[in-house]
Image 1 (cartoon, protein in one colour):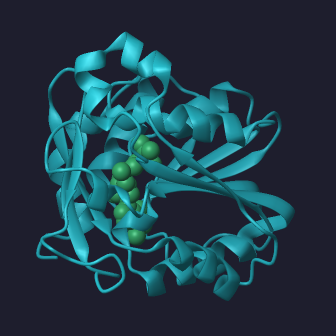
Image 2 (tube, helix red, strand yellow; image 1 turned 90 degrees about the horizontal axis):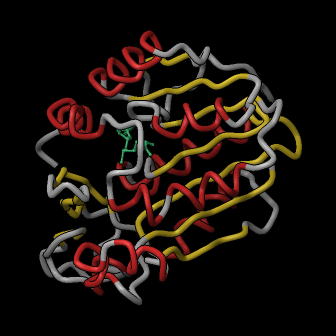
Image 3 (cartoon, protein in one colour; image 1 turned 90 degrees about the vertical axis):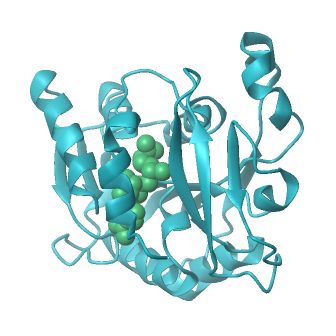
Length: 251
Ligand SMILES: C[S@@+](CC[C@H](N)C(=O)[O-])C[C@H]1O[C@@H](n2cnc3c(N)ncnc32)[C@H](O)[C@@H]1O
């Protein structure tokens, strides 16, 4: 990985700035993650890898009592703060590494979310972040995260509107290898994304190694009939393919 994650996102930050769904995953993943965050009224929430605040804003608007966002990329946080200043919701953002959460208190949050964060770190870093999440969640708090489906890179060719380039890497032997990729917006703009490859059981093993003991709920996310009806040209090549995986676990 020559370019760091922060460098990758610093150069593409403006293409992520949005107030309505534009990216493929704004349709195929984020609405589901948001629905899983309910009931959100009165909750104290941490959004890890919050980007420019797309999800953080929606959670605050839906009634969360307190929302904090942390992201490693200065330009993404600058975008989040600019939107907050233009339309204040009371969300706190800071530049930070999800693996360095020492400034946060034990059991400070009711809900921690990480929407497409773990595809930017390897298995060891993921376990380390999950341990920190467990420390800052109150007892019986919730941890909800989404990642690219582990099979997606093996099922879809390198073509719009979403792909990861695995360069011949194997499903098991390719663990922790970096698959560079692109995801498209419906207006035709494509943005760079990255997936540090993990297998399905890596997520379960990391949660267990981090100290989570409950069984997570998981959902495989894929284009729904309403997506195909709304914009068949955009979604059709992904029909019947698993794009993302969402996890929901109680601490
Ligand atoms: C695909 S974007 C998703 C942004 C946001 N969660 C959303 O759903 O719109 C991934 C984000 O993870 C951030 N990121 C990557 N590694 C990180 C780390 N170690 N700590 C915090 N943020 C990180 C990137 O800067 C980027 O903003």
